[in-house]
Length: 288
Image (cartoon, rainbow, N blue to C red):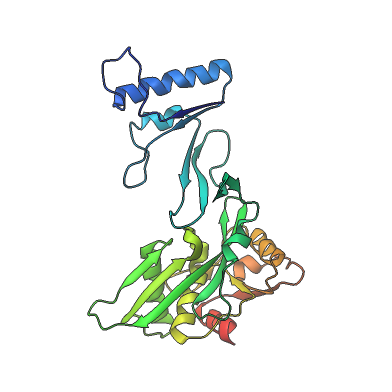
């Protein structure tokens, strides 16, 4: 195989422009592509990214290559995530998880256990959600902190989640569950620095906010997932069978999930499935 680090620093003398220019990047990438196809050599082009996280340089670079991979990670954590945003010959809904050790990057064979290793027990505002990356379920801890504020504008801080999605769920809880959250500081974090983007985490966000606000602990052997609508209804999500299977494998005893997803779903051994249809059902199932 061949690794070029980086495509923005190599150049061809056939062009007068400087290395890193649009013409140089385009020409060098095209020549390397022809070389890889002709010789049958797997070629990796390392590229720079802009401040917003997109690939630097001409868009044509993404069209030339077969696969675009982003190597992501939080500097404060030891693990890294390899995520595909383009794959000409396969799915883009797959990830690889690696851990940085003294001998380099090592593949994490069981990311769920790693992300839950330091989860505190009997802590209000802490829940576990099975997120799906392609066909790979990963269990992560989601934490929320709701506290009073002396500021005129309460703070809304999110880490690893879509800020607008969290604000939407806060409004739903205020309207449908009767919780007074608008005058509270709200902080929501995905432990371990993971980023969650799918709507299936809505139910977990709502449960974590309610748990912190009421200072009531969600049972540590409970897991939950589902999408929540503006009217407080809980909607079905994709691949519930993969999520509950991973939860059962890690020893969870109870799973709160959308009623639509629970339909015709065979519960794994040792895992109780609790269908949830609305916000009222969620609160009842969480705290009886």
